[in-house]
Length: 274
Image 1 (cartoon, rainbow, N blue to C red):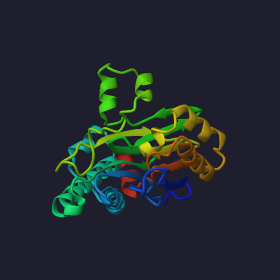
Image 2: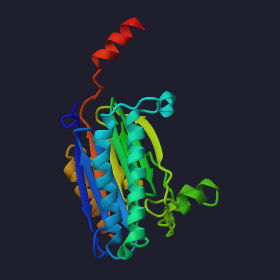
Image 3: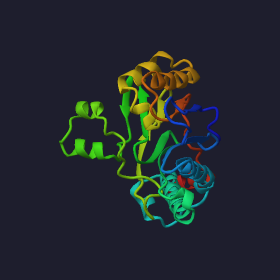
Image 4: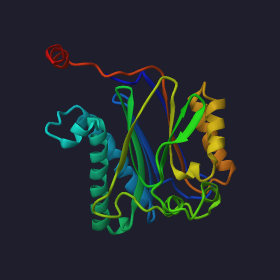
């Protein structure tokens, strides 16, 4: 079932006012409800290579993986959706490709990328991320950060060295503790949440979240919610107005109507006799 008429999506990426080139990459495949954003780093243009590999790998692997049978996977028995496992495994694969490329090509040495991706399925959202690119959700005027940054600053907050207010004012926000391509293996954080009609989801690079306070992001989405394109443009403009010190990328998705999964004939027959 295509989700093109169930979810509206807008993607924007901007170089900002300071950087010479854009190392962020965004992408989507609404037939299967997939959104992905990556923020590259390391070496001249190498960050762009890493983020490009990450997004392309996820877009290539996830749609086909979700249509494959996954038998005898113990993770499925824990209640984790197949889609979540497929999303995580695609990011793990991207890490391997980026790391191998960095090792084999001198101009790509030291490159890496953060990533955040989500997959809409059966009125739920599978979320996977590595690094400090974020996913937020706006529901009934409640705006909340769903992902937790993999960063030194977040670890210091978790350990009580900083309050959330002090962290928001800190200038040391960009030291990530986890990224794709840095090591041969990577731990991808995954989770699942529900989705309702009128929910708005925001994926963004730190070029937005470092420049614009959450309250202002919330206000912008709420004010211009009737036009998702305008929301995206306003968020990018806000970041640039506040200095535009990094590349700025946003992916916005609004749930237009419920998207329950179709029940197969086999499942219906099985239900009758169970």
